[in-house]
Amino acid sequence: MIGGNDILLESGTNEMELMEFTIAGQAFGINIAKVREIMKCMPVKPMQNAHELIKGIFKPRDQVITVLSLDKYLSLPESRFPERDIFMITEFNGQTIAFHVHSVVGIDRVSWKDIQKPDQIIYGGEEGVATGIVEYDNRLITILDFEKIIAELSSGSSIRVDDVRHMGVRAKKETPILLAEDSALLGKLIADSLRAAGYTNIIKLDNGQEAYDYLTELKNGGAIVDREVALIISDIEMPQMDGHRFLKLVKEDATLRQIPFVLFSSLINDEMRVKGEQLGADAQLSKPQIVNLISTVDMLLKKVGKGA
Image (cartoon, rainbow, N blue to C red; front, top):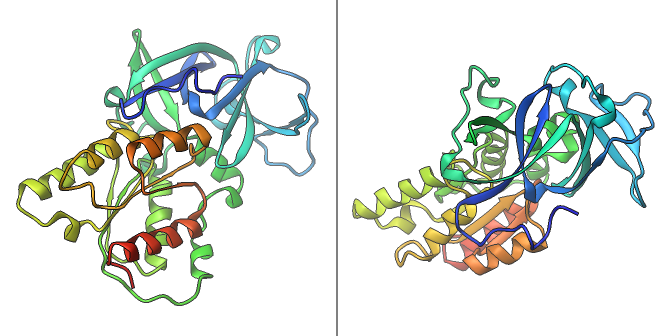
């Protein structure tokens, strides 16, 4: 097993354990918190009418797991030595998926501050395949947007704005909500869902650093910050500053700490929940539970006297 307390970093350090793997000789990365285990490739059972990226299914123990070909998804050549290939078994968004990769290099400890936003032209525009680029030991590692990959394969595994509309007619509210989310696709879906729920004043920023800088500028400019930002929603995985570091800085600040802070991430599990609690999160929800997010936002705003 890969995931566990032995590799989880101290809360709020703005560091990440990155599992580095290769496809066609190119270096890619995934947050180790998403990886359950790695194993040698095994025979899989093809599934009729499955998406072209799905290799099939296999059952390593007592669980049937879907296998996805990352080389095909990235339009890269197949492995020259398939007998050496690896299944990287992941758990996030409440799903278990095996990604077929060509090799696993190891685990690198990197700072989110060193992770740069990828060039939109090279990596597919605003909804591209990469969430970050980091240099490690003279290698450029592309951090892939695994949530986007899964969302493209199954709409049911991503945020659906229609789920919010099914909550019924809701009053429009100008209550300002700050959203920190690096994925362009998921950021748009979350913002659209909030607007569908009546929250029309959404301040969308791309990472924790931008969001913290925004709050700091408000504070230093003499604004009554909680009037300008009534609630914060933040992802955990973000370049420059992750959600845990952002949360830590907010809750350590005498002016900002009263703003309700919600972690909304595919990484929420038992270990991550403990981290969030230690840092003072007011709520922690796993993507894609958008209806639960709206209900939590309603509850927290009402609690601080800014709800309906």
